[in-house]
Amino acid sequence: MQLAGQVVVVTGGANGIGRALCEAFHRAGAAKVVVADLDLAGAQAVAASVGGAAFKCDVGLEQDIRHVIEETEQQFGPIALFCSNAGIGGGFDPMSVNAGGTSDEPWAKSWAIHVMAHVYAARHLIPRMKARGGGYFLNTISAAGLLSQVGSPAYSTTKHAAVGFAENLAISHKADGIRVSILCPQGVDTNMLRSIPKGPQSGDGDLTPERVAQDALEGIRAGNLRHPAAPAGRRLHAQEDRELRPLDRGHGEDPGENAGRIWK
Image (cartoon, rainbow, N blue to C red; front, side):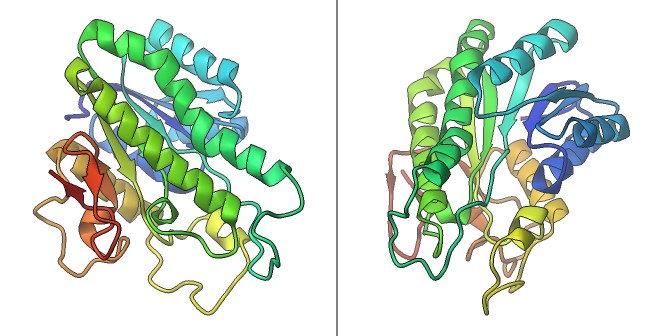
């Protein structure tokens, strides 16, 4: 997919990976980059820097997702690429004595933001994309969706669910010309990563948001798992093809050392 002249939406676009994606898409020539975030001031600042537009959006609320989609298409034209990037890192407790926790709150919040936000985007965009012959979803998930996340059962579980939904979305709508990729980096130097409890692994090979965004852009352009310029030793997850996965190539996945690799 080429981004030049296209309308792109990025949720969670006020900082971190989301901000870096907005900047990368702008450099790639996107006609309009729409920055959606709960932090409206932050979204407006990013939008101003890329000549885009900003919306306040709680991605856990269906009406907010619907509003962003409807207003974007009314004001700027068809959305070619929708990036469900917003996420939270709450509920981390490496010393927890019970993976079930003591409250439903972190589970419900993680489910709303990591899973239902992706569902809402698809619910309101799929009919529009089908009518015009295609579109692209890029869902930022995490390496935790392919492996696990010690200390946060809610985060790990909802990230796995997000992978499952993205795979089903890709399978269900490949014939409609709709593409789906998931972005699954391991440690990325963002405010969210800095907010969780530290351990001996903290800061070990963390990626920059800019690097993740550039790799995502090149993967979207190439339409495959890895791009030719990718250094063999770069640390995304454990192998360079694990960060960006197009999900319309097969239905099975090896759960072992090749986790993240699509099997045809």
